[in-house]
Length: 356
Ligand SMILES: Cc1ncc(COP(=O)(O)O)c(C=O)c1O
Image 1: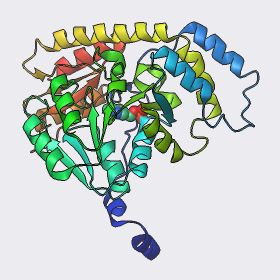
Image 2: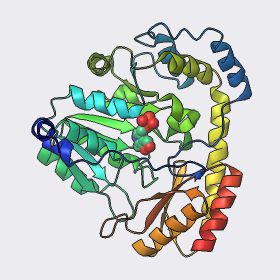
Image 3: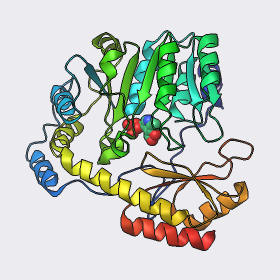
């Protein structure tokens, strides 16, 4: 390694592995919780008209006012709450952890979305993980004890959780919010696929913000996440947002897409139905399938070796899912499969049964 790199780059960054995205060229892609459907035809026609004058010679609207207004209407966000946008919700996690003091650390239940820990490491923020119970529910006594001990600056609760797929018991989440001295970020990335949410009742909490994304509803390529909360919180996070973080094309596309929200809602309903069908078909096999309020299923095979051989077998047949299994961890034997289109799910099921 070049000497100056060793000297100048933070040790915790040197020790990290970059977030790995496997090559999926030519594969049926069921690894990243994307929506398999393309966007509505009418939206596509409107989008083409944007190219008559895409205005990419100009910087974007720095505060993306139209996008925020479109989100407020489409998601029924109350007038007393504000919204800040990120280049995906990943960037919002970064903005939050850039703005907070950080010394008291970040607390999450584990396993959960990996970017909370990675970004905490970027900023040298202490990170505390409290294991979920065996059925991947919050271990409330352990969470409350950790809250009391560390008094963390930020608690992230993915609701529903990735990679476990379940939405934690609401009373447990409420108990954590009440016990917390710091900020609780409810990450509702999977909102299109569940009926639970903190968005409607958000105004009643002054230490809670709700983070969402348009990625899972069908717009992962746009990179647009949003954070909703009390104006006092949003004002501070907005200060660390880079001025033009939402590009011109994303802003235009998002406004068009959000005017077709009902079509995206229909797609989400279709995915929820397919999730149920996939679950039923898989439940004929002697595997453990966890309940899901998301657009993916978490499956536990007999052991790590079986998970590995099913993952490899599927890949050889052109189907990419996610292997989460690591020996001696709570996810040993686990695979995660995104709910795809009907033909994709059929292909997955047939191949899964062949390699089982
Ligand atoms: C719980 C959770 N939060 C946030 C994200 C990131 O979403 P985005 O595409 O908006 O960066 C993901 C992505 O998989 C996720 O699972």
